[in-house]
Image 1 (cartoon, rainbow, N blue to C red):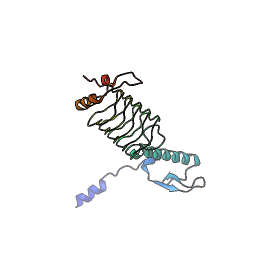
Image 2 (cartoon, helix red, strand yellow; image 1 turned 120 degrees about the vertical axis):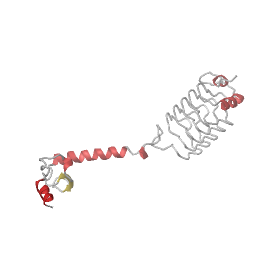
Image 3 (cartoon, helix red, strand yellow; image 1 turned 90 degrees about the vertical axis):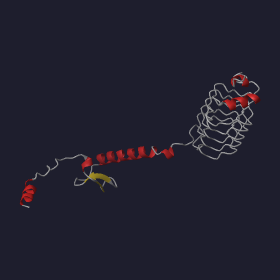
Length: 218
């Protein structure tokens, strides 16, 4: 017991911190001043001057804004130039997009049954896993569009330009009108290509390419 008391008495305590310490070394408190309703300061310090308070307030505002805009829930406001209207994961059945410029527009997982895209500019637009049953894409510019896993059955693709579009996965064009459509460099499953070659005819009025040639039909 005596040894314990001696060791406790002779143990060196950690040195007292030197001042001033960084701001993070002290808890912050809100205080009132005659200049601003509230301001941040370190405990034990006199009220901040107007300039210092404004600088810290601005820093906090910037930090809050960065956290706000990093919220993934705010990331999809249309996904393209179609105003601020959200078009991803929406029920847009029968919606009229005819003649609109919708470059790189995000329609992922949306329901677009009987939607009208006649003559629309849809370069790079995404229809990933979308339901496009009966949609009208006649004369539309669909170069580089993504139809991966999309249901494009009974759609109207007549005279549409699909050069370089994606159609990977379980994409289906069953029952669609493809007269004059250009499928140049579109990756298709063998069964889809075989089916489309049975119904393909016409020449695309923009590219001058025969639909059967773009499908590499035998």
